[in-house]
Every structure is written in structure tokens, then in C-alpha cells.
Image 1 (cartoon, one colour):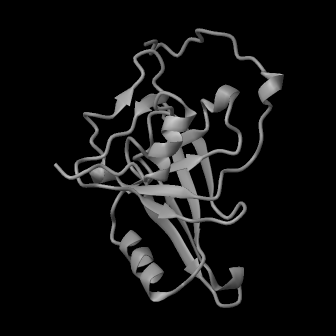
Image 2 (cartoon, one colour):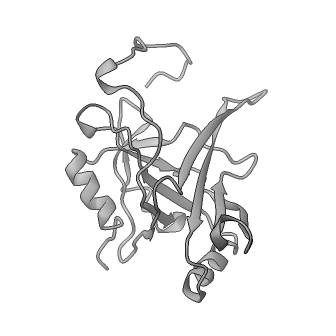
Length: 197
């Protein structure tokens, strides 16, 4: 793996796979502590490619349902003066129904935990091999904002998860491809759930 910061290949525009905005409606949120980092595999030749996202035995991710483009993701470069630059990942989510069960989960988000978000892009790349991205895999995302107003956003709870300042990620969001699109989609649909011991 090249850590010199030198380019190693051409950067090309694939007109057959032109960019498309947005992510698919549903997202999987995972407690960062539930991920088995030792069993999660990153490509030996591409540090932004995860080939297996493994949770610990008996653990699962949690579905956040969306509508249209209610949920979103973003990332940005964070310049460092005396260290390699890093990337801040941000996930923007909406909780549609502010009922007691959803409010309880929203309250849990505010307790200081760290989370990882797995999203499916509308743009999927050639053969749908680049559909899924993981935000916060290294440092984790924390609740950064949460708002609710009866006069705005139809009374929905709107929130953001992001890397804390000074604890950004070493790469942009990693692409997840576990063999092929179908296998990755199945794992995503199953919320990456792992059977107990």
C-alpha cells in the first residue's frame, strides 16, 4: 500500500456510470462497539474497500427507515498541520414518527455512544460493485445535532451523526463489497446480524 501521497493510477470519467445524487431510503446504524474489528476485512491493495463487515456474536445493526431523500451522507477533508489529513463523515437522519418508542431510541443516541452508518447509494458503479458505503468505521460517529419543532418538518425528529472534532477518519467513507452486490445487499437487509456464540 502506498502511503507517500503520490498518485498511482489515472483518474478517469466513466461515462457509462455517470454520477447520480442521493442514497436509498433505508440505512443501517450499528453500535461501533458491536463491530468485530479483528474479523472485519479491508482490501490489502485498496484501503478504502471493506470486503467483510463483521459484527460480534449475537449483535445486529438497526434499521432507520427513510422516505425519498430524507436521509443523507456527506464527508469533507480536514486539513492537519503536522499530521496526515483526515476526513469528517456526517450522516443526516430523520425519525418520522415522534412516538414513545422512537423517542426512546433517539434518547439513546444522546447518551454519548459511537455509531457506524451503512448506506446504499443511488449511484452504484459498474456492476453495482460500489453501492454501499460505511461511515465512521474508524473513529465512530457521535450525535452532533437533534431537533424537533411542531411547526417545522412535519414534527419529525431531525438529527446528525458525525465524527467529533479531532477524531476524524483516516479515509473517506469506505466502500463495502462482500463478494458481489447481491451478497452485500443480503447482509445489509439482514442488518449484518450475527448469531449468538
